[in-house]
Image (cartoon, rainbow, N blue to C red; front, side):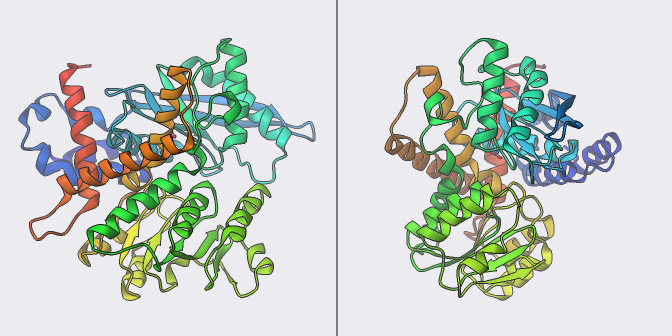
Length: 445
Ligand code: 2IT
């Protein structure tokens, strides 16, 4: 494989799709060496085949708002690769959504899902719909309109969407309801469903919990414990909430959360009440964290800035792609950060990752650290297929096991001669090899 040539070709075909090109470049650069030891990969053009989605859908979503005005949005689904199982991945509803963002997410999803040990291919979808300030009835009408187009392309054995930014339990409920009405079947076609209609216990917590389990393994590798460590978390949505809950339960002190408006610094650390308040903030639909500082004296709100300027032991980006840049990384390193566990998808820019790796700082990439979310979606699919429910303890035990095996895979493929663990390389190579070998075994398709 010639990475430069392949990237030049991809840039020519997909001009300006910066997030997609960024995600592809990162994977190709890290797998190049191993790939070139397998001439059969090159002969089958695995690299050229793996970087493009199998198929892409773009559709119009028309709905009526509470004022009676007609609204027009765009819906998408990118089915990337199903060599190891049905297409699987979330739906994102956010005004920034475009093909580049969904293709970077769909591409990463293939390797993340491969790492989970469960049989799931990769996909991603969503819409430029902005949930901010929308009423419940508007969200419902939008979800119904979205599903009237999407339903013919998905199915429990074909493509299983779930949530992502802007899509939580409420949206999955409305989407599932419309699918069920159109298809006239009750199936595991979406994950993240409510507990009364096929959802899995622990799924809402799984991304954050899994991330903290992975973090604990990273710490153990360095002979450290999570107890007493200070953690900077960004974001205040489902993922940040799950990570903050588990880290706090295990004795860490989470001192920041953030939103598009700025960040909260709470030197006393989060507790049960404050963590519950994160859910209230999210449910308010305003996408701001500033009210936290009014509610909890002793905490401060810094408008327009990110939490990476706070001195902490551990940084856990939990918001969105490219939220931690080279400057932020330098600041964290200068402040003596010990570990970075990226929970958002592609939360760190290439410059940030380079800074961490140059400093020999353990950096866990999103596709390993946050894989507990989709892994538990996979466990929801298993339960739906069996028409059975596992207890919370059973699901949590499986999640633990999956995060351990992902950590082991990172060690196997990412340990360098000097003993430094390059988790990014480990995750990319382990995920890539599984998908590539599956494609190779199934012929030229
Ligand atoms: O980025 C992700 O892995 C998710 N948004 C979860 C996907 C899923 O299918 O549960």
